[in-house]
Image (cartoon, rainbow, N blue to C red; front, side, top):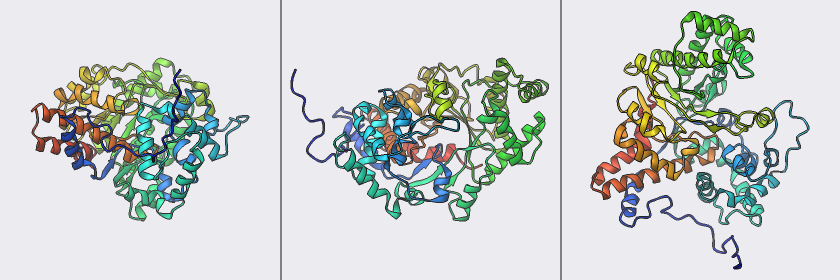
Amino acid sequence: MPALTDPTPAQPWTLHPDRALPADPAVRPIARDIYAQTQGLPLVSMHGHVPVEWFADNRAFPNPAELIVVPDHYLVRQLVSQGLRNEQLGVRPVAGGSGVVVEEDPREVWRRFCSGWKHFRGTATRFWLETVLVEIFGVTQRPSAESADAIFDTVAAVIADQEFRPRQLLDRFGIEILATTDPAWAVLDDHAKLAADGLGERVVPTFRPDPVVLLDRPTWRADVESLGAAADEDVTTYAGYLAALRAQRLRFKAAGARATDHGHLSADTTPLSDAEAGRIYAAALAGEATAADVDAFAGHMLFQMAAMSAEDGLVMQLHPGVLRDHDRAKHALFGPDTGFDIPVTTEYTRSLRPMLEAFGHHPGFRVVLFTVDEDTFSRELAPIAGVYPAVRLGAPWWFLDAPDAMRRFREDVTETAGFSNMSGFVDDTRAFCSIPARHDLARRVDAGYLARLVAEHRLDLDEAVDTAIDLAYRLPLTAYEKA
């Protein structure tokens, strides 16, 4: 067996300027020219999960592990797949999780992350992480067990700087607008604080009603009570429940919200009669809703959310097709986003028909459709977006916001839907420092796709550049235009 070389090179760790651009020597120079026109554009981050309190409080990040490792479930799940446990990576249990010994030493969490660096090879997470470490923190050593402490010290020195606070990073990262995701019962005090400080148009809320419309959520009743308290509505009746949802949507809109966000298992939008919806709602309050009731009410409420969007103008974001918390024991122990969400086959054509027949041509309705089921790109989603004026195709997200998946998306949907029916890139992350890296990757992939069209004489270069700017900047502003 040949001797293995040292996996950590002696020379400083740098990133190739052409990473993720096409390898074809006839296409790469064109891609470089296109990418150069989008590289410095502002970031429009209209769907994400960075906590709003980070910006409201504007405190220093505690340490590298708490900033980069612990909150990033992409990163954590990859290391868990190699035998580490959530708690070894600093993930803390929710209430009732006593007995779990959590690693409290951020250096030890960081060492485990760096020791597992090889496991990220070929993944999108690798691209984001290396961009963050090299370009934001100035790291010059590739992560490894040997380099872990030195890298920790480098990153710690950067985050200790007063200019590395969340609000200051909005400017450093070039973020023009960032949307947080907030529960339906939020009173939005943190957003009010940001507005008072002049950031109300820059950091905006997004209305996420899933916990109060999916009847099988374990905290559904308590969350509905919180909704009623926030809206000052009697939610013991179905009519009061709908009134509370409408009131909270208007509160969000007044606070600058552009959109709502819906993560149902199914894309079903079949409406129920008021009487049947009221019956199921009463049964749920009594703890007597059946599995069929739960599914029917979820589809009905997506239809109701669409109807409310047509009224108030909030953009509806729908990303179904994920079986949340596949490992129920992990979810029970550690809470949301720790139970390993797994995609499932998703049907859109029949499921969305009731909603689109009712609102697909409505001038006040806009919906952005996402998927993690690639089979639906060309068969269902592109044709839907190619005919209904209310529909925009959301960017590849989650498992699909990776170079090859992004290329497949462009190849599968563009010929049917065209570029103008896209949402532009949506980063969908809670890993704040990875936002610039994710947008950069999307811009590189789009530059490569457009460069091939130029090389094949299917677009002129000026058209390709204009389209690249659309995808990176103009289209997300348009798709999420304030009503």
